[in-house]
Image (cartoon, rainbow, N blue to C red; front, side, top):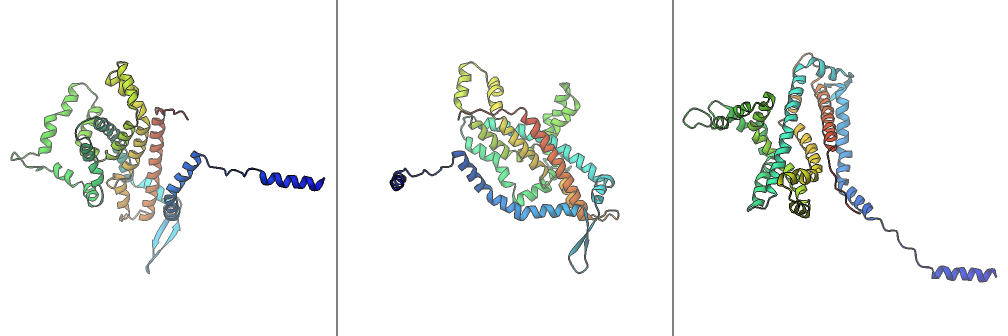
Length: 333
């Protein structure tokens, strides 16, 4: 009986259907593809950037002594570099407050301008692709030698000179444009607060830089606008909604995730640009000759990390505030 049972078990095992291979779900395969895509960056960050970051933190707590025969050695001094930057270097505090204030005021202007241009360029019109390329062209040109020229602000310095663009009357053409618009008097007659007047005038005077820094944000907004189904707009039109109502009830909520993305991108881009006031000041600290300075390299590293922490706090605040108003469309699985 035992032999017959073993024989039947052997036959049944042979006739049994082969086990199916477990196939990963679509989400898992997408996750693996995503990790594979970012793997070069992860490897580069761990092998190249992470050691530099750790070394920079270590330098901020040390005094770097240059040796006569070449090389250097470090002497641990604790928080002396941070203390010098915050309590003794008044120029750093002033530059930090001024630079952060200017950038915080520029960020809303850049986002609003890029959103406005994206909505215009999303309309059906002749030459739409050419207009998109024109507004994105400054992003392409802001590399290499063009970036260096922009950082030196040669054009702005030339226009700010008393001679300016000579038209025979001894006055600058740029000044005549601002005077013709008479923006400040216009807003003053409307009884608007002086702070708002100064903000608007500053944005108009800085329009070149705002346009130059809005190309990437404009493309992101365009991608968000084109992802909205035309059927939604058709339904709004049938219901008799105006363009104003359609924008605030449909367009603005649907692209609110893009507003969050652009806000984060704009904050990071603004705080790390070459012509950033604080970045330029920290770079110049390395050549400082103050006798009371513990160490130029160590102080510069300490300033950089304080600046980094402030940027992270501002970035977290901006992302947290905008996230409260972000609308995410639910999709049926």
